[in-house]
Image 1 (cartoon, rainbow, N blue to C red):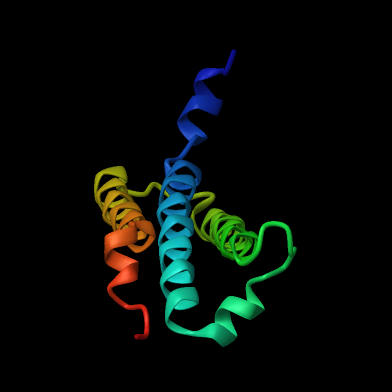
Image 2: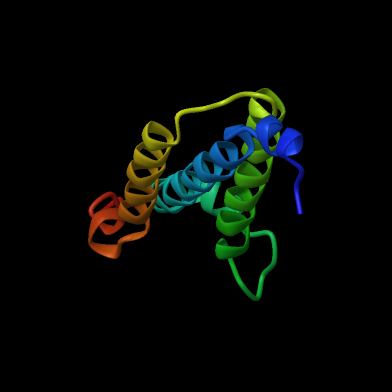
Length: 113
């Protein structure tokens, strides 16, 4: 149980960092999927493990982006009070854009013919 003094020192920064980094990781996944469709060089680069193909790299760069952004944002916001509502709205938008990038009718529209 936290003491009243400890409760006063808690800030929203770490939570905001976790929320926004989830959105950033999702966006990176969508971008990686789209770039792998557009460029065979990127698709080959993202093939980190042959049995999984480029999916291994797509998910890998998304996880790296998520963890790196979480660490960086946590470091920046660790002792700050951050407005959660705009962060949550931004995260929802980033997640939606990331989902769009992984949606087959969307990324297939960018396939070279």
